[in-house]
Length: 464
Image 1 (cartoon, rainbow, N blue to C red):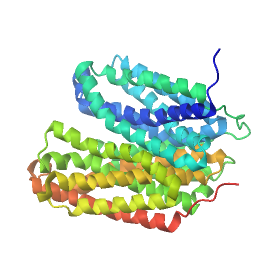
Image 2 (cartoon, rainbow, N blue to C red):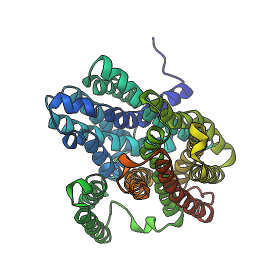
Image 3 (cartoon, one colour):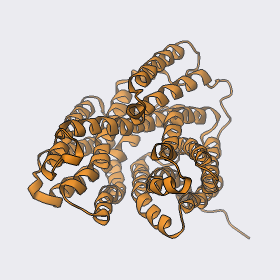
Image 4 (cartoon, rainbow, N blue to C red):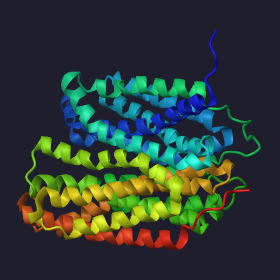
């Protein structure tokens, strides 16, 4: 005779399922990057075509994350999370079995659609399932596993690629998705009745998806296609149409009045600005490590793993700090630490070598872990339960847009600071100087984020 698990054990298992929902989207994104050169050879395609294996996942997850959160609020978060995990697993299996490049791209888009629901609904369900006095620890765990997935992807992907081939990178994700699905089915509490009286705003969802797709494509492919201006114009037109449509429906996808709340706007702005700065280390860091400091491939891999490893190590203690001292104080401390570390990267001379880069990087990413643990706790604690899916989707959207914008903005600043002739003619000192220019801008963005946080992010009042 089997006995049902104790409430504490069931709660831990439910949290494990939600933690996997943070791990898998991050792992699914980062593990594919290392396979691109191999896929060029495997399919006999150009890099411009193969990079859609990464872009399809990015576009699907970015354009659908808000709609997934809203659908979860209407239909039931557990129901939609189970569907999202199943879709992610299906995409993983189809990617592993893909007979050609474009079938692989389609499978990755399915994965990205599933990842959108997992990201939005995982955070919302944590806020609902974990007692308020332990929400910081739970959010810290989610941040830790997301960072761990980002760090694990390139290393694990390289090993699998060398030993088993590119299909193993996607096949690995299928049993992990099945584990998450099994835990979620068994341990997540059942949803209440669906809110069928409210209709889903399909037009708003379509307009928002097209707007976000145009913006993301403008920043990732616009220059190569010679269409950056037209795509940005299309994104601006789509945004105007989206706002117009939201004002004319009874149950909009995004309540624009809610976005006028100072606290929500401040959290979303700070999240986007922090993501821009984080992308500076991910995109520009490798150029500095290789061209300025002379690291080989193995050294580069180890150095690039330092940042995600710091987030993974600090995430859980950061969550405990949120529970003890409050999300506002810890979030501000995280932003202040990031500002000081970014300033250090902007000032560190090349003569300080690897230590002059990794020291501030450790401080930057550890402070980011503090901010990352505090932000969802602060935001979702002040939101009515029926809105948590939508707000969680908006938070993930702000982060994704910050990452996409950061890659384009900081890349442009870096290239502009290089001497004529570009990276190929730049010496170590010139590459290091270009990196410092980028971190001067990053420090300015963090100063703005800190000012916003100090002015707007007072401790929230729980909803009635």
